[in-house]
Each structure stands twice: as structure tokens, then as C-alpha cells.
Length: 118
Image (cartoon, rainbow, N blue to C red; front, side):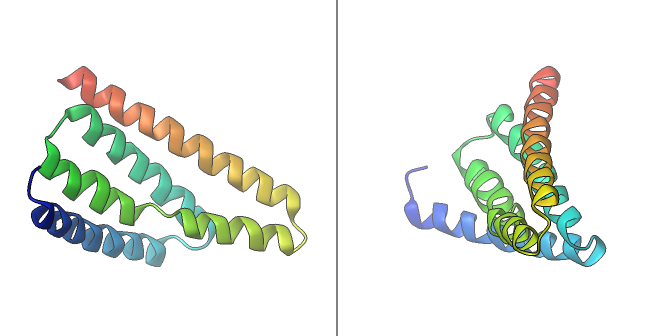
């Protein structure tokens, strides 16, 4: 995409939608489970979008904007550190591992599914 203003607008719109969707998930699923859910779902979507080669405008809107705002490294970090600081180091390690494995598996699944359908 050659127009940086259009790219920024698409990222902004996608980000707004992704942040709103993230909030909706947090209303439905509480605590650490919501963090794993959004990171896995966002990674699944990101894998699909990138495998689909949808073009730079759709990539800005969906991959950078929506998936970037929907997934949450900051909440992952806060939950991991606060769990460990609360004396549950073993739970923090399991949470961190589950989050990483779920996100990687979901990304690979999304990209594999879209590539198979294309």
C-alpha cells in the first residue's frame, strides 16, 4: 500500500474492532482463561489472514489492526507476573506455557486450513 494515511486509518479501524472484541471476550470469560482464549483465537485468525495473502489493505485492517488489538501480550505479562508474585510460581509457568503453545498451535492451524482451502 502506497498511501500511509490510508494504511494508518485501516489499522485504526481494525484496532478499534479488535479491542472491542477483546473486551467482549473478557466480559464472557474471566481471568487467565480469557487471555489464553484471545491469544489463541487471534493467532488462529492471524495465521489465516497471512496464509490467504489478502493484500496490503486487508492485512493492515485485519492482521495489524484487528489481530494486533485483539490479542494481548500486556495482559499475558500482567497475569503471569501477578500469579508468580502471589506465590503460585508453578501456576504462572503452566499459564505461560499454555498461552504460548495455544497461540502457536492456533496460528499453524489457521494458516494450514486457509492454505488447504486455497
